[in-house]
Image (cartoon, rainbow, N blue to C red):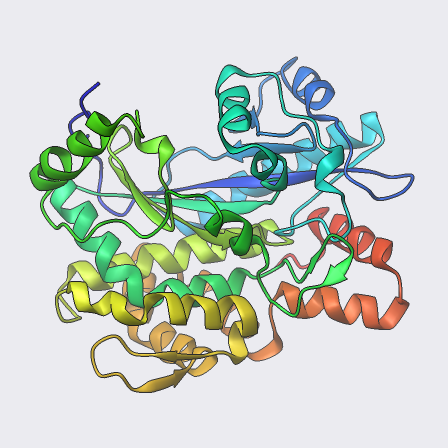
Length: 375
Protein backbone atom coordinates (compact mmCIF):
# COMPACT_ATOMS: atom_id res chain seq x y z
CA UNK A 1 0.00 0.00 0.00
CA UNK A 2 1.26 3.55 -0.69
CA UNK A 3 3.13 5.33 2.06
CA UNK A 4 0.75 7.57 3.98
CA UNK A 5 1.04 11.32 3.96
CA UNK A 6 3.24 12.83 6.63
CA UNK A 7 1.05 13.77 9.58
CA UNK A 8 1.76 17.30 10.78
CA UNK A 9 2.59 17.39 14.48
CA UNK A 10 3.62 20.10 16.90
CA UNK A 11 7.31 20.74 16.22
CA UNK A 12 9.83 19.69 18.86
CA UNK A 13 7.42 17.58 20.89
CA UNK A 14 9.11 14.47 22.19
CA UNK A 15 8.42 10.92 23.27
CA UNK A 16 10.50 7.91 24.27
CA UNK A 17 10.37 4.15 23.74
CA UNK A 18 12.50 1.87 25.92
CA UNK A 19 13.15 -1.84 25.37
CA UNK A 20 13.73 -3.44 28.77
CA UNK A 21 15.20 -6.70 30.04
CA UNK A 22 13.20 -9.19 32.10
CA UNK A 23 15.56 -11.06 34.42
CA UNK A 24 15.23 -14.04 36.75
CA UNK A 25 16.23 -12.99 40.27
CA UNK A 26 17.52 -16.51 41.00
CA UNK A 27 20.29 -16.65 38.42
CA UNK A 28 20.14 -13.18 36.76
CA UNK A 29 19.66 -14.69 33.30
CA UNK A 30 16.91 -13.45 31.02
CA UNK A 31 13.54 -15.09 31.63
CA UNK A 32 10.54 -15.52 29.33
CA UNK A 33 8.28 -13.44 31.57
CA UNK A 34 6.69 -10.94 29.18
CA UNK A 35 3.33 -12.78 28.83
CA UNK A 36 2.88 -12.80 32.64
CA UNK A 37 4.18 -9.26 33.00
CA UNK A 38 1.88 -7.90 30.30
CA UNK A 39 -1.11 -9.75 31.79
CA UNK A 40 -0.41 -8.27 35.22
CA UNK A 41 0.15 -4.75 33.89
CA UNK A 42 -3.04 -4.95 31.82
CA UNK A 43 -5.25 -5.31 34.88
CA UNK A 44 -5.15 -1.61 35.76
CA UNK A 45 -4.23 1.68 34.06
CA UNK A 46 -0.60 1.97 33.00
CA UNK A 47 1.11 5.41 32.98
CA UNK A 48 2.01 5.21 29.28
CA UNK A 49 1.94 2.18 27.02
CA UNK A 50 3.54 -1.24 27.36
CA UNK A 51 3.84 -3.79 24.56
CA UNK A 52 5.60 -7.09 23.82
CA UNK A 53 8.86 -7.24 21.92
CA UNK A 54 10.21 -9.89 19.59
CA UNK A 55 11.28 -12.35 22.31
CA UNK A 56 9.54 -13.12 25.58
CA UNK A 57 12.46 -11.88 27.68
CA UNK A 58 11.82 -8.24 26.84
CA UNK A 59 9.07 -5.62 26.86
CA UNK A 60 8.79 -2.14 25.38
CA UNK A 61 7.37 0.90 27.14
CA UNK A 62 6.24 4.09 25.40
CA UNK A 63 5.62 7.50 26.91
CA UNK A 64 2.95 9.97 25.89
CA UNK A 65 3.83 12.99 23.75
CA UNK A 66 5.50 15.74 25.80
CA UNK A 67 6.80 19.24 25.25
CA UNK A 68 9.32 19.49 28.09
CA UNK A 69 12.03 17.31 29.58
CA UNK A 70 10.64 17.53 33.11
CA UNK A 71 7.23 16.19 32.12
CA UNK A 72 8.84 13.33 30.23
CA UNK A 73 11.06 12.45 33.18
CA UNK A 74 8.11 12.44 35.58
CA UNK A 75 6.23 9.98 33.39
CA UNK A 76 9.27 7.74 32.91
CA UNK A 77 9.71 7.57 36.68
CA UNK A 78 6.04 6.68 37.13
CA UNK A 79 6.36 3.94 34.48
CA UNK A 80 9.53 2.64 36.13
CA UNK A 81 7.89 2.45 39.55
CA UNK A 82 4.92 0.58 38.08
CA UNK A 83 7.19 -1.91 36.32
CA UNK A 84 9.30 -2.48 39.43
CA UNK A 85 6.21 -3.22 41.53
CA UNK A 86 4.92 -5.66 38.92
CA UNK A 87 8.32 -7.32 38.71
CA UNK A 88 8.44 -7.74 42.48
CA UNK A 89 5.10 -9.56 42.36
CA UNK A 90 6.46 -11.96 39.72
CA UNK A 91 9.98 -12.26 41.21
CA UNK A 92 11.34 -10.72 38.00
CA UNK A 93 13.96 -8.01 37.75
CA UNK A 94 13.51 -5.20 35.23
CA UNK A 95 16.52 -3.31 33.90
CA UNK A 96 18.09 -1.39 31.08
CA UNK A 97 21.35 -2.08 29.31
CA UNK A 98 21.78 -2.53 25.57
CA UNK A 99 22.62 -6.25 25.87
CA UNK A 100 22.27 -8.85 28.58
CA UNK A 101 25.88 -9.80 29.35
CA UNK A 102 25.62 -13.60 29.29
CA UNK A 103 22.24 -14.78 27.94
CA UNK A 104 22.33 -17.33 25.10
CA UNK A 105 20.34 -16.28 22.06
CA UNK A 106 19.39 -19.89 21.23
CA UNK A 107 17.36 -20.10 24.46
CA UNK A 108 15.07 -17.19 23.62
CA UNK A 109 11.41 -17.66 22.72
CA UNK A 110 9.73 -15.63 19.98
CA UNK A 111 6.65 -13.81 21.30
CA UNK A 112 3.46 -15.17 19.76
CA UNK A 113 2.49 -12.30 17.49
CA UNK A 114 2.09 -12.51 13.68
CA UNK A 115 4.67 -9.82 12.86
CA UNK A 116 7.28 -11.35 15.17
CA UNK A 117 6.70 -14.80 13.67
CA UNK A 118 7.07 -13.32 10.19
CA UNK A 119 10.34 -11.61 11.14
CA UNK A 120 11.62 -14.84 12.69
CA UNK A 121 10.73 -16.80 9.56
CA UNK A 122 12.50 -14.28 7.33
CA UNK A 123 15.64 -13.61 9.37
CA UNK A 124 16.21 -16.96 11.07
CA UNK A 125 18.61 -16.90 14.02
CA UNK A 126 19.07 -13.13 13.66
CA UNK A 127 15.57 -12.68 15.12
CA UNK A 128 16.56 -14.33 18.41
CA UNK A 129 19.91 -12.56 18.37
CA UNK A 130 17.85 -9.38 18.19
CA UNK A 131 17.24 -9.77 21.93
CA UNK A 132 19.03 -6.47 22.39
CA UNK A 133 17.63 -3.38 24.02
CA UNK A 134 17.46 0.12 22.61
CA UNK A 135 16.01 3.53 23.33
CA UNK A 136 14.10 5.27 20.55
CA UNK A 137 13.38 9.00 20.72
CA UNK A 138 10.66 10.67 18.65
CA UNK A 139 10.74 14.39 17.80
CA UNK A 140 7.68 16.07 16.32
CA UNK A 141 8.03 17.75 12.92
CA UNK A 142 5.79 20.30 11.23
CA UNK A 143 6.20 18.67 7.81
CA UNK A 144 7.79 15.76 6.01
CA UNK A 145 10.36 18.14 4.53
CA UNK A 146 11.37 19.25 8.04
CA UNK A 147 11.59 15.61 9.09
CA UNK A 148 14.02 14.75 6.28
CA UNK A 149 16.05 17.91 6.90
CA UNK A 150 16.48 16.99 10.56
CA UNK A 151 17.13 13.34 9.78
CA UNK A 152 20.10 14.20 7.57
CA UNK A 153 21.32 17.17 9.62
CA UNK A 154 21.60 14.88 12.64
CA UNK A 155 23.98 12.47 10.90
CA UNK A 156 26.94 14.39 12.30
CA UNK A 157 25.62 13.98 15.88
CA UNK A 158 24.74 10.30 15.82
CA UNK A 159 28.08 9.38 17.52
CA UNK A 160 27.12 11.63 20.45
CA UNK A 161 24.01 9.60 21.20
CA UNK A 162 25.79 6.28 20.74
CA UNK A 163 28.59 7.25 23.12
CA UNK A 164 26.38 8.87 25.77
CA UNK A 165 23.91 5.97 25.89
CA UNK A 166 26.35 3.07 25.43
CA UNK A 167 25.54 0.29 27.88
CA UNK A 168 26.34 -2.97 26.07
CA UNK A 169 30.00 -3.86 26.64
CA UNK A 170 29.38 -7.57 27.29
CA UNK A 171 27.66 -10.08 24.99
CA UNK A 172 27.31 -13.88 25.19
CA UNK A 173 29.50 -13.94 28.31
CA UNK A 174 32.46 -11.98 26.95
CA UNK A 175 33.73 -8.43 27.04
CA UNK A 176 33.36 -7.32 23.41
CA UNK A 177 35.78 -4.37 23.86
CA UNK A 178 32.94 -2.25 22.43
CA UNK A 179 31.02 0.35 24.41
CA UNK A 180 27.93 -0.47 22.33
CA UNK A 181 27.92 -4.03 21.03
CA UNK A 182 24.14 -3.84 20.50
CA UNK A 183 24.44 -1.88 17.28
CA UNK A 184 26.47 -4.67 15.69
CA UNK A 185 23.38 -6.88 15.99
CA UNK A 186 21.20 -4.20 14.39
CA UNK A 187 23.68 -3.71 11.55
CA UNK A 188 23.28 -7.38 10.56
CA UNK A 189 19.83 -6.64 9.11
CA UNK A 190 19.81 -5.83 5.38
CA UNK A 191 17.61 -2.72 5.71
CA UNK A 192 19.66 -1.13 8.49
CA UNK A 193 22.14 1.74 8.28
CA UNK A 194 21.06 5.15 7.03
CA UNK A 195 18.16 6.56 5.07
CA UNK A 196 18.67 7.57 1.41
CA UNK A 197 19.67 11.18 0.89
CA UNK A 198 16.39 12.85 -0.06
CA UNK A 199 15.22 16.17 1.37
CA UNK A 200 11.68 16.44 -0.03
CA UNK A 201 8.89 14.25 1.32
CA UNK A 202 7.26 13.92 -2.09
CA UNK A 203 10.53 12.59 -3.51
CA UNK A 204 10.94 10.18 -0.61
CA UNK A 205 7.38 8.95 -0.95
CA UNK A 206 7.32 8.63 -4.74
CA UNK A 207 10.90 8.06 -5.84
CA UNK A 208 12.07 5.88 -2.99
CA UNK A 209 9.37 4.22 -0.91
CA UNK A 210 7.03 3.41 -3.80
CA UNK A 211 9.86 1.88 -5.80
CA UNK A 212 11.03 -0.13 -2.79
CA UNK A 213 7.49 -1.32 -2.19
CA UNK A 214 7.23 -2.39 -5.82
CA UNK A 215 10.22 -4.69 -5.31
CA UNK A 216 8.22 -6.57 -2.69
CA UNK A 217 10.97 -6.10 -0.11
CA UNK A 218 9.11 -3.64 2.13
CA UNK A 219 5.51 -3.04 3.08
CA UNK A 220 5.80 -0.24 5.64
CA UNK A 221 8.34 1.99 7.38
CA UNK A 222 8.65 -0.70 10.08
CA UNK A 223 10.65 -2.76 7.61
CA UNK A 224 13.50 -0.23 7.72
CA UNK A 225 15.94 -0.54 10.64
CA UNK A 226 17.68 2.76 9.90
CA UNK A 227 19.57 4.66 12.59
CA UNK A 228 17.08 7.50 12.10
CA UNK A 229 13.82 7.05 10.25
CA UNK A 230 10.75 9.18 9.56
CA UNK A 231 7.46 8.06 11.10
CA UNK A 232 4.75 9.65 8.94
CA UNK A 233 1.88 8.22 10.97
CA UNK A 234 3.14 10.10 14.04
CA UNK A 235 4.60 13.13 12.29
CA UNK A 236 8.03 12.50 13.81
CA UNK A 237 11.57 11.44 13.21
CA UNK A 238 12.76 8.51 15.30
CA UNK A 239 16.36 8.27 16.54
CA UNK A 240 17.18 4.59 17.06
CA UNK A 241 20.92 4.38 17.84
CA UNK A 242 20.79 4.63 21.64
CA UNK A 243 21.29 1.64 23.91
CA UNK A 244 18.67 1.52 26.65
CA UNK A 245 20.36 3.37 29.53
CA UNK A 246 20.50 1.92 33.03
CA UNK A 247 18.32 4.73 34.42
CA UNK A 248 15.24 6.58 33.22
CA UNK A 249 17.01 9.81 34.17
CA UNK A 250 19.56 9.24 31.43
CA UNK A 251 16.85 8.21 28.96
CA UNK A 252 15.02 11.49 29.56
CA UNK A 253 18.25 13.49 29.32
CA UNK A 254 19.08 11.99 25.91
CA UNK A 255 15.61 12.95 24.67
CA UNK A 256 16.03 16.47 26.00
CA UNK A 257 19.38 16.80 24.23
CA UNK A 258 17.88 15.64 20.94
CA UNK A 259 15.01 18.11 21.31
CA UNK A 260 17.40 21.03 21.90
CA UNK A 261 19.66 19.93 19.06
CA UNK A 262 16.72 19.79 16.64
CA UNK A 263 15.65 23.29 17.68
CA UNK A 264 19.21 24.48 17.04
CA UNK A 265 19.34 22.84 13.60
CA UNK A 266 15.94 24.18 12.54
CA UNK A 267 17.23 27.70 13.20
CA UNK A 268 19.77 27.16 10.41
CA UNK A 269 22.74 27.22 12.78
CA UNK A 270 24.61 24.62 10.72
CA UNK A 271 25.41 24.33 6.99
CA UNK A 272 22.77 22.42 5.05
CA UNK A 273 23.21 18.63 4.97
CA UNK A 274 24.81 17.12 1.88
CA UNK A 275 25.18 13.56 0.64
CA UNK A 276 28.97 13.74 0.99
CA UNK A 277 28.48 14.14 4.75
CA UNK A 278 27.91 10.39 4.80
CA UNK A 279 31.42 9.61 3.55
CA UNK A 280 32.57 9.54 7.19
CA UNK A 281 29.32 8.27 8.70
CA UNK A 282 30.12 4.58 9.16
CA UNK A 283 33.61 5.35 10.44
CA UNK A 284 32.26 7.80 13.02
CA UNK A 285 29.54 5.37 14.02
CA UNK A 286 32.14 2.63 14.56
CA UNK A 287 34.36 4.91 16.65
CA UNK A 288 31.48 5.73 19.00
CA UNK A 289 30.38 2.08 19.26
CA UNK A 290 33.91 0.81 19.85
CA UNK A 291 35.45 3.51 22.03
CA UNK A 292 32.47 5.49 23.30
CA UNK A 293 33.41 8.90 24.69
CA UNK A 294 37.09 8.15 24.00
CA UNK A 295 36.48 7.77 20.26
CA UNK A 296 37.79 10.06 17.54
CA UNK A 297 35.43 11.15 14.76
CA UNK A 298 35.86 13.11 11.53
CA UNK A 299 33.80 16.24 10.95
CA UNK A 300 31.78 15.61 7.74
CA UNK A 301 32.32 19.16 6.41
CA UNK A 302 35.84 20.17 7.48
CA UNK A 303 37.29 16.61 7.80
CA UNK A 304 38.86 17.71 11.09
CA UNK A 305 39.48 14.94 13.64
CA UNK A 306 37.48 15.47 16.82
CA UNK A 307 37.36 13.86 20.25
CA UNK A 308 33.83 12.51 20.80
CA UNK A 309 33.89 13.73 24.41
CA UNK A 310 35.08 17.23 23.55
CA UNK A 311 32.68 17.50 20.63
CA UNK A 312 29.78 16.60 22.92
CA UNK A 313 30.82 19.16 25.52
CA UNK A 314 31.16 21.87 22.86
CA UNK A 315 27.77 21.03 21.36
CA UNK A 316 26.08 21.06 24.76
CA UNK A 317 27.27 24.64 25.14
CA UNK A 318 26.02 25.55 21.64
CA UNK A 319 22.51 24.24 22.22
CA UNK A 320 22.17 25.46 25.80
CA UNK A 321 20.01 28.51 24.92
CA UNK A 322 17.60 26.25 23.02
CA UNK A 323 17.44 23.79 25.90
CA UNK A 324 16.72 26.63 28.33
CA UNK A 325 13.85 27.82 26.15
CA UNK A 326 12.42 24.29 26.04
CA UNK A 327 12.93 23.47 29.71
CA UNK A 328 15.81 21.08 29.07
CA UNK A 329 18.67 22.64 31.03
CA UNK A 330 18.69 19.76 33.54
CA UNK A 331 18.97 17.27 30.67
CA UNK A 332 22.10 18.92 29.35
CA UNK A 333 23.65 19.11 32.80
CA UNK A 334 23.07 15.37 33.28
CA UNK A 335 24.87 14.61 30.00
CA UNK A 336 27.68 17.02 30.82
CA UNK A 337 28.34 14.92 33.91
CA UNK A 338 28.25 11.74 31.81
CA UNK A 339 30.81 13.19 29.39
CA UNK A 340 33.17 13.87 32.31
CA UNK A 341 32.51 10.81 34.49
CA UNK A 342 31.83 8.09 31.91
CA UNK A 343 28.89 6.25 30.38
CA UNK A 344 26.99 3.14 31.52
CA UNK A 345 29.39 0.84 29.67
CA UNK A 346 32.18 2.16 31.91
CA UNK A 347 30.01 1.67 35.00
CA UNK A 348 29.29 -1.96 34.06
CA UNK A 349 32.96 -2.71 33.42
CA UNK A 350 33.86 -1.14 36.78
CA UNK A 351 31.23 -3.34 38.42
CA UNK A 352 32.79 -6.45 36.90
CA UNK A 353 36.31 -5.36 37.79
CA UNK A 354 35.25 -4.79 41.38
CA UNK A 355 33.34 -8.04 41.91
CA UNK A 356 34.61 -10.44 39.25
CA UNK A 357 31.01 -11.49 38.77
CA UNK A 358 29.17 -11.29 35.45
CA UNK A 359 25.89 -11.88 37.30
CA UNK A 360 26.81 -8.94 39.52
CA UNK A 361 26.64 -6.65 36.49
CA UNK A 362 23.00 -7.63 35.98
CA UNK A 363 22.25 -7.16 39.67
CA UNK A 364 23.79 -3.68 39.49
CA UNK A 365 21.69 -2.85 36.41
CA UNK A 366 18.51 -3.92 38.23
CA UNK A 367 19.42 -1.74 41.20
CA UNK A 368 20.13 1.22 38.91
CA UNK A 369 16.76 0.89 37.21
CA UNK A 370 14.97 0.78 40.57
CA UNK A 371 16.03 4.36 41.20
CA UNK A 372 19.75 4.69 41.84
CA UNK A 373 21.13 7.68 39.99
CA UNK A 374 18.09 9.92 40.37
CA UNK A 375 18.84 13.62 40.26
